Amino acid sequence: MKKAMKFAIGSLAVSFVVLGIKYVAFAVTGSLALYSDFLESIINVGTSVAAIVAIRVSALPADANHPFGHHKAEYLSAVLIGVMIIVASLLIFHEAWAGFLDPKPIEAPALGLTVSMGATAINALWGLLIIRFGRRARSASLVADGKHMLADVVTSLGVLVGVVLVVFTGMVVLDAAIAALVGLHILWSGYGVLRESASALLDEAVPAKTLDTIRGIISTQAPEAIEAHDLRTRHAGAATFIDFHLVVDSEMKIATAHAVCDRLESALEAAVDGAVVSIHVEPANKAKHKGIVVL
Image (cartoon, rainbow, N blue to C red):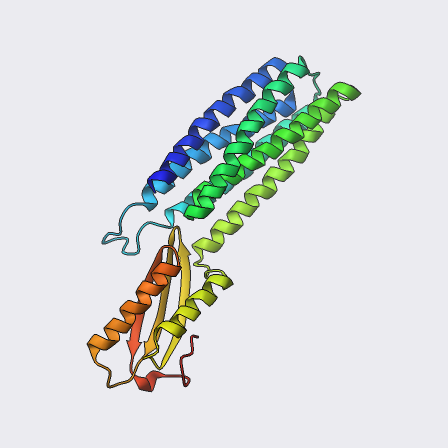
């Protein structure tokens, strides 16, 4: 988690640097598209702050009021990031409409493009890096922050194309048109972040491949058991909650049943990152099938 926090702080620093560079690009050109790109980058700062808060809160240990921990704080942060991305798209639509009504020429386009390309390169490299780390660390807020940075990269590329077209064609209104198209892309990106975060908040089950792994471990690591059923899984940040009922012989000693559960927990924790296992032991008359069946 300490490494995740370092990445989140790094994102905040990169966001401020890119924001400053993009403002310079807008200031020297007066381009509406570059101004929209600058507005979108302000959201990067906000999403980086949200990621830092989420990672800090989600790392807090379980307490009396939050017995399952604070893992879902990351998903709440990701929802906030999605909302902020959508707000950025609305800001761009507003500026694009103003540009359609009152088109303005672009000044010093070569300098503005060069400066903007530098900011875009920084965003692309850092965005890819934190998405890769965020997925490995199962940090929803870092992944969302990285996706927003890549959305910002697409924004910047669209803006660069718009500025080039305006310069070579003399059609100043294209400045606003490109900004509007980029706004649509950002809107779609924000929707994607909200959709993924909502699924996690609704206790979405683990992927099918992980579920097969869990079933296989239960089937092979508990030969003394009669059956396993009512298997349930869910994600919460870096934690994967796994609970199921394990049916054993009614005459089995408590110590033996406990040893079987310990073996299962150890195997599941070794195979599934962040596994939190809960097993409910039941007597033979609770069996629904014959043989080890994981339902």
